[in-house]
Image (cartoon, rainbow over all chains, first blue to last red):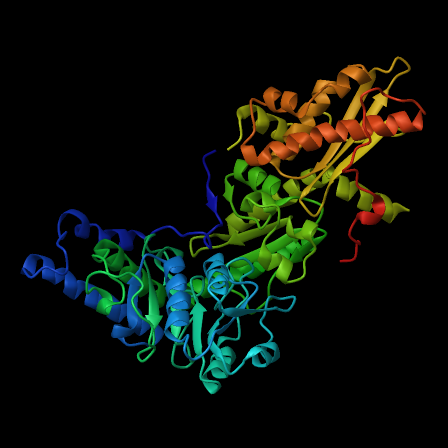
Amino acid sequence: MDRLIYLDNAATTKTAPEVVDAMLPYFSEYYGNPSSVYSFASQNKDEIIKQREIIAGALGAKSNEIYFTAGGSESDNWALKAAAEAYRNKGNHIITTKIEHHAVLHTAEYLENQGFEITYLDVDENGVVKLDELKAAVRPETILISIMFANNEIGTIQPVKEIGEIAKENGILFHTDAVQAFGHVPIDVDELHIDMLSASGHKLNGPKGIGFLYIRKGVKIRSFIHGGAQERKRRAGTENVPGIIGLGAAVKRAVCTMSERSGKEKELRDYMIDRIEHEIPYAKLNGHRTNRLPNNVNFSFRFIEGESLLIMLDMKGICASSGSACTSGSLDPSHVLLAIGLPHEIAHGSLRLSLSDETTKEEIDYVVDSLKEIVDRLRGMSPLYEDFIKKQNK
Amino acid sequence: MYTEKVMDHFQNPRNVGEIENASGVGTVGNAKCGDIMRIYLDIDENQIIRDVKFKTFGCGAAVATSSMATELVKGKSIYDALSVTNKAVVEALDGLPPVKVHCSLLAEEAIHAALWDYAEKHDIKIKGLEKPKSDIHEDEEEDDEY
């Protein structure tokens, strides 16, 4: 296998060469601890301040509102647990959705065990939160609304501004998991009334193991990692200097290239959706058709199972992912696909293809051609397809 | 994740297909869990399995275990086929990841279900064969609306 077609950019992205270049000196050359007094190390502190400014600028935030973390999961955990703790005197109710990433869902379940009440909002068939249900779920004791910016599986982008307005009107904190969206779609925390936002470096061509939590000034959440005075005493631990430098470089790159990159991705995304819909029967697009991440394509192919599909794609050098149970290590297919109303067996046959700015039309053509052949082959061995065809012929 | 044998049987599955007017057909598993196996048996008057075919909806391991199970019973008497266990299927494939062992159980059950169907159709009793429990029925399938 000499060719590799990487269409799993929602899982992780290639670290951009300029990001790696920016990081490299911070391993063996400028390795000082930013908390040290001597100038050899303290210049790293200045570099961190610069990165914080770049990131804050990308969100319309202030630099002292950006807190570096080890990634999206930590940011989500922090936002939910610390907000719950800090605002417990005000109430014990939190609103989230059924389609959140597990970093939010499992944290919410943990809080439920700690005595918090959680409302998990339904979504419509496109994966969009229903605003009237959100409004109806608000109670006097609601302290936090946590709704993801864009879904990692089906790519649907939520009406974040409207959600933020509802939170603001009711004096409730609004956290959004923007791990998939940040660096891919424009975000302005003031315009969207976002109080906390989670993001991760490796989803935008930055390094793994670094992310941040935006915390609006005035939000009273406390330290998540106790220890030294780093991150305004809210997240102790020697800074991941190369990671922070890499994240800053990745954000800079993402902001500069966003409109051109997403334009290109959208064009290819729509071309791919169009070809699959026209050329593969019994395929259903999951997620909102237009209000979706520029690089997300997610289909369910009836009568076949996702893991077999992934292995056959892998044999053709194509990297993708699926919401089938077999790929999740449980018996149930993806909670997101079930939440948008797909029956189990159709959810098992889902395929997510997430593009990058390096994806070419020629690659998309190769993938769709391969997909046609593989889907045909798997349906040829599927008892579900056999039954379906027999029923049709009756 | 998979052994070379599993990959071989997944990529080049043996005995895929249907048998018209099969002596026995067994379908086990359910679509909800993501695994369905169907085995067709063609059994001659001496109770020898002359031909066997399968169809499977499921993961790589489900396809490979079905394929291997068909190989292990082809040409055998129904009693020899009955004694093909899931363990034998796993061993013949040089092992399966622990989370996939249930696929081999499904393959064993599918063979049993097909033998049960054969016994019922021919009004005979196969000693040691119990009525398969996970046989799926038409009316249990989700509707075909789309």
